[in-house]
Picture: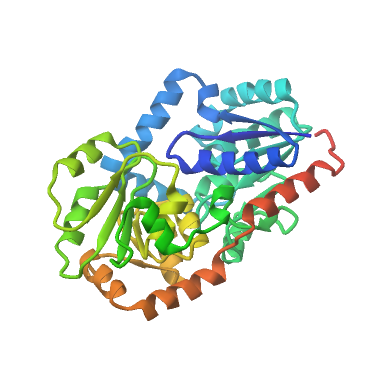
Length: 376
């Protein structure tokens, strides 16, 4: 059995999801291959997407949010004649060549932009392989509605079922299995032991400050606000690949103990050491925090899918959002001082988190591959 993964290098979450599923399948003896959808399109497209995502999310985020809202209100099949859909036909040929060369039994897609191209590919050329789409946010980007020919659509939770139905998906296609995360998140470490490993005080309240794999957002401003709190605390800061933010934070003199990290694979250990996480609400970071029952303070959501994530998480009581009305410092101080409130958030987390998401999805993929596969 062979499984081909398509993701996109805009942010790190989509790739992380694909690799998490692939590693689990490989552990079951299944062959996999991972493809960056926009590398197929050529260097120019790849550079435009990867660099453009950071540009849009950092400097043009409100414009992105406005476009997102417009797309959310598209009617019916109006997307079929959109310039984006029509331009995808040339990419569909390239996708077909990759699929034909590898000849997988199942194709898994973790990004809505790639999903659109895969849908066009199946529409125009047919496909022996079954197609699985994995939604990696607690909402559905409008482009997912262009994946109507997918055999399965994997949702993070049952609460998204009405939205999936509205977009035209059926019970046969939908599975609410959760957002897959790496197997390394399956075995938590005792909080005091995690702090010992990291060289942190076992007694101080500990905040983990993250901003995605690309270090989006003004992390210095977040840290300055936390550093002014009267409450004693220590902070772990993960800058991801943002070397400029790392350098600026390193040069600054902080009043409170601070552990500064760039890109790291030790996120499970950092989460185990923390009492709270302060982060933008990316789907993967959020899912990883939920797996650790780690209460989140949401900051700097990118307008569009991330503020939809924020609305969902705060709506179900699984996170708290900082805002002008409820500034970060005030929210953080209140949660540090109220362990009962943190326990309430953890109870709400228990309602929506899906600890076996990766394993359940692997089983779904294997079952799907064994079904009769008609040529369309």
